[in-house]
Image (cartoon, one colour):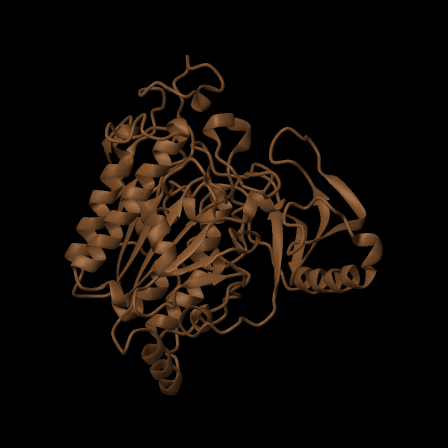
Length: 458
């Protein structure tokens, strides 16, 4: 059973300032659109030469595009836990050697964790989860147990529950069998289709999202739209199949782009776009071992599963027409910032006694103010592999996303200047020992403040 939430209201002067800056005193809606395994280089506005993403490109042109935005983990379960709680996954126990939850995993997001959906409840927000959950299938860890009024989607990754006779690696085929995976489609915890028809998922998620927006246009709401794709196996609806130069991967991404356009249009048509913060990002980098079905990290090194930049630096686009000043920012930000940002816009202070690892992005979003300097810690499982401080990144351990059995330890750590070397090719540790010392002090202080949660992924 969850403990009662202990919130205190933001002081009136602060609340008035936030509302005046962001939404003119009206309640703020929050929409988070979360892609699965989308790479840094997979959108037109991030340099893709082959995948057409006009809706996301428009969203970026009308909003704020981040060049240095991060997911808090290199794979999906911990990254989703971090987004919804505003905390590094090690604090909730949602990380470990097994890396993600599987269909037979006994654990899940602990009931004591306070999600963004729960945190917004004191202000009367309607809440809905759509798409992939992957934070637990047992009591206490399911969407309706974690603050969502409604839920529609898959309980875990679409490549789980594979048919017993399916060859290993079939999820990465360019034309995978439609009935190859027995993953169920759930509505409010009840199975409505099994196996889920994956060719229709993006369309049906979008229809559910648009319907939720229309239904709740007259009250504040939080919509968490966590798409299944472009995680393998890849599927697209008939209207998008074979349409992209990038094959089925591009088809899936271009349908996601269409979905984003539908959501933005629904907000505009309902007359609530100016009081709705929409944030688009991805749970981690591209799954490169899937080849043509794995996407691209652009000029960044490696991809999903690694703590190199390609594994955790992802697209990040914030949109709120008339409120967010259009532009591009190189300020460091990450998915754990979304919870404190949403709470600030709702006029709610963070919950008492909970350590949050994110920051309120409102000054950056609405006033173009620089954020205070802060470090970012790169975890793989429950191990801290690297740390970024300003433009500098130190690697204490490195391991490719897949295929390298054990991590390589570095003493002294590798050091890269991400502004000059975003591909992490030129180790400059020998000439910047002072920077390494500073980063190591920051890491030591961080370790001393982390109390690991009970492991959930064993």
